[in-house]
Length: 446
Image (cartoon, rainbow, N blue to C red; front, side, top):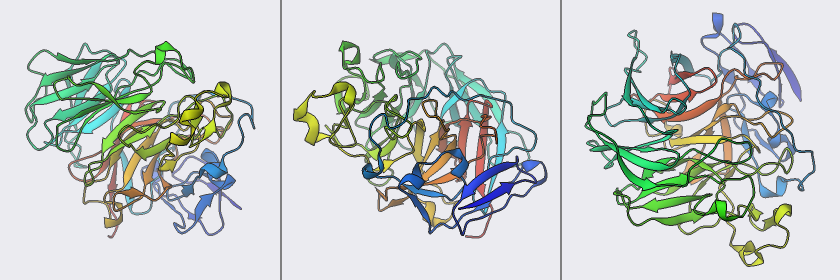
């Protein structure tokens, strides 16, 4: 192993990397930072589990079920992020050829973000219960404009335009206890009508280990079905409070026809439709309190009527010891996710890259925001990751794309939440620790 101290325009850190990795940082004041990593090397086994000190743009990981320790191999930790203002000189780090800039700040709890067909960015500010619009995020000299589309919502998170395509008629919003919709035409900066309730959902809370309140909303590629993610009420209980929770629900667009599309998914915070295959995908927070490296969060395509294990099993036939002996008939039905992530990373919104600004090898790949751990003795997450895809299928690996939100002392100044592709092909993400929006653009040679 090689240890390299990062200085100059970036916050001084000590990173542990594998031989052959070259890392450099440029830009007075930290406004452009790049790392170069040998992309041929993939961290595997125990080396893939790691923590924030092994993060760097371009670092790849491959985690498999065989890498998992036994339950309680380490004690369960309560290690909340110690949030601090961005230190002088600190700046997010991106791969060579990319540039990152902060395009908006002083928002209030910005969470999920989506791109409207006309290019406006819709942002759920969940705590104040409103939807903001950010217009003009294109890297030009003119600052973006902020507006408020709707207020009076109940912990809004998911945002979707219907019908799919260039001319939507409605904006759907996932409140914590319902799906509502507003009349909408391209370019609207403010809702021109009252919201209509489309579907009732199990309400959420705000608790460690459960009480999940986020509700994401997406439509099938043909617009015939609406999918809504509903997280569990608990960490790992199987009582009546979990009815119609820890699943992805399916509805008709007007709210009829409710059914469980897939189950055993503890908290699919972000869901997305693959632009070519039309498959439903999910970015999932798994359970806590089994140790530092159990159970991995994951990103996966979601099989209709599929069962993903929660709360009785995980990663196939592995039984949660807190439910020993329960439901043996389900053991062989548990699906193994496509991409396993470092445990407790808190994987939130995901999207697929549909732009043309990035190099061709990025097209069709997934991106996800990792909000960061609390149930882990050594922090992990706090970054944007890339999920390489081949012909619509995940390779199983994932790659750090934006890092640098944790100080040398392990304090945190940035927590990514939402991620979307802008009309110009740049990648936009929200950060609810610094209450800001970031833009990653490609400036290098293709």
